[in-house]
Length: 460
View 1 (cartoon, rainbow, N blue to C red):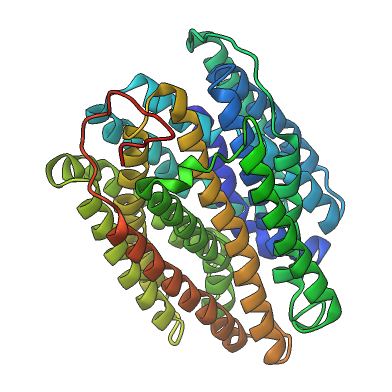
View 2 (tube, rainbow, N blue to C red):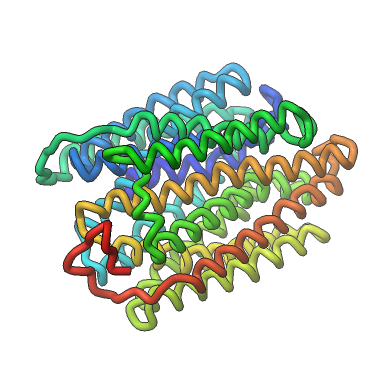
């Protein structure tokens, strides 16, 4: 499971430091947010489908499928010839990634007790810590020597090893039953979110916000999103059951996951580029500064287990929210006088906030249901986090592009980049505040798993 997590972890950090090199080679600075958005969108919209199948055909077939598709996407990305092709192949990667992390976290919920899960989540989070060093370092090395394609080819041996380990060592007993995949819901969700992200990315750059194109794209996305909701109400096996939004605990933790994803992608997208342009830092060094975030995360994730077992899920999550608000607000202020060490220190603090907020809220959601609902609940949590990342990447990209164009359109000027990224980080602080509000709104959750879990009469 740690090896499978490593696939997603390394890929999320290795590409961030290579963005300047990729843009210098194949162009498309205004399009580069799509490298993140399309990957996250593809993974997000497939998570509910995978989660539903995980509760019907089992975890093992799906995670092996995800690793295989991720491998194919990585190879294709390595051979991309321009920005559009790279964006398309990143979508293939995302389709595979959608089955990896959610299924891994579901498997943790299956295998380990409530008391053990924080420790095991800490082990998984440590993968992100290792990737915080390995990923940016490899990405920076490849970028520095103009060999950015290598950042995708390094996934090949990792995929093969992870697939072999899971195939040979993980066994499960699943009672097979007939199931129906909600194709209509999946299609409506994919198209609606894609249109909304397209509208956010192109607004203010490709067309004016009040132009007919903008209104048509955003309007169509909103209408299709409403249609998705209507279809889900009538679907026999909806990919996003409405009971996961009717329970106060799941509603607040899903909102919290959305905010985690949005804040995280804003930092991953812009911290390395900001430091490279404004301080002259090498890509390797800029990547390590971002890596401080994923060092703080597993530290807090491990400690959070002791805290929520003693004080409860809600107080621990609120602590994480407070740390996040303070860390992101200070990061936004730091863009006035860019400093590599200050940014690295604040990324570490923000990582602590993520660890104290994300892990307890996820474990609380898992602890409120039984096995046959755990896949859907975990998948929904990761779905909202991925959607938060996808929409966050688009929204922050629109903010940055608007500021850059408003200041003359030269993203290589330190003052322009500082202003653009300052606006992005300020937006992240606002989202972190929403996260804190969601944490405060969480109900108190008993540490014991309920004896029964009826979707119609939920325990919380």
